[in-house]
Length: 193
Image (cartoon, rainbow, N blue to C red; front, side):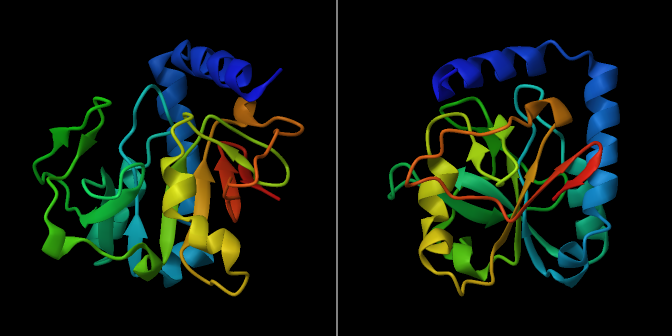
C-alpha cells in the first residue's frame, strides 16, 4: 500500500471510531504524555487542535496552562507558504478557521515564537512506524516547519512527540528524504519505543 492509499485507509478507519473510543484513547494518551520528563522540563509547548477524530491533546494543554507553562498553537504562516508558525494560546482565546477548516489563533507577527524556541511539540499524525517516521495529512507543513531538526543532529529542541491511536502503527512507512521523524510517539497503550 503506498502512502496515499495508507493515508486514506487510516483516515477512514479513524473517522469510523465511536466518540466514546476517541475520548477514551485521547484520555489515555494525554495521561501518558503528562508523565514524560520532557513535558515536566518544558516551558514552551506547542499543541494542535483535534481535527477529523485525531487524538485530542486538549487535557495536556489545559494541564500545561494551569501549571504556568507557555502554550502555543499552529497557524498557517501567511508569508512562508507551506509552513506553520506558532502563536501563544490560552484556553478560551478566540479562534478562527483556516483554509482547511481547522481552528487557529489570529496571526500577529509580533507574537510569533520562533520554532527553535519551542521545547516540546505535540504533533498529530495519520500513521507512524517503529522508526518513528510520521505520515501526516499529506501537505508537508510539519516537515517543512521542523526540517532544521532533521538537518541538525545536535538540535535538542524542539522535541517532537506524535500522538496517535495504536491502530495507526504500521510496520514500515515509505519515508521520503524530506520527512521529519518524531523523537517519540505516544498511543493509548503507552510510549512507542
